[in-house]
Image 1: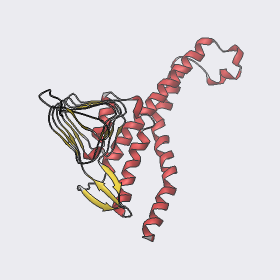
Image 2: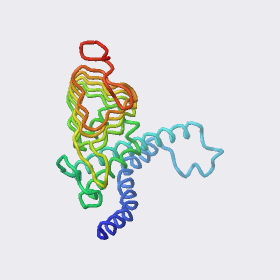
Image 3: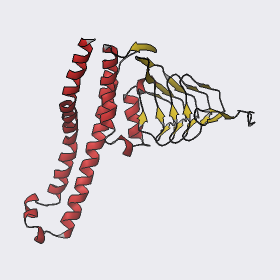
Image 4: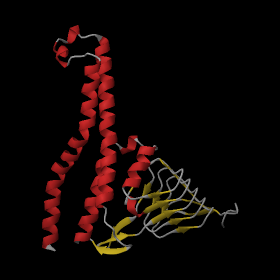
Length: 248
């Protein structure tokens, strides 16, 4: 599809200035906070022209102001990325779509906002700000969910029940590409389930209530883990059943 290639190249060309625009807009609160702190404490930026005569505390205060400004920028970036990601996320039904199609372009465009958020999101998980980002992006989160990962992709197709814990750097994908197609399938994780650190959950998986996915396990696509079971390994398999017995 020549038209697909042309549009793909065009969108790639405008992606960099668009990224710069989002980062620049989000820097406003941080810049304001920085200069406001400096002004309130009576520190003049011009005084740094004579570096040897600047009191040590001025450097300390300036450093603190800079840190607070950067943090304000990061939080603003994450929240705005969540809002835009939720607004532009494709409402795709589970299924297979040609990889070279406008549906795929729409999906890829929506993923850009998650990539922008990754500038600062890893520093905000676990926290209510990280959970807010995922909710704004379209994820369905129950009460008491603890997300320690910045890599829940396709948030609009992910459901986490009450009390779910997602371990550090765990990856949840509701998509994959294979045989020239984009495959979309939701991921559902039941109440009180634990997804271990560094594990990978592929599209279409259903994790039952209270189930445990061990650290660094890889759960293949469309796997159904029954409630209460423990799965581990690559590919993941049951290593302890719900009644505590070990399968042969």
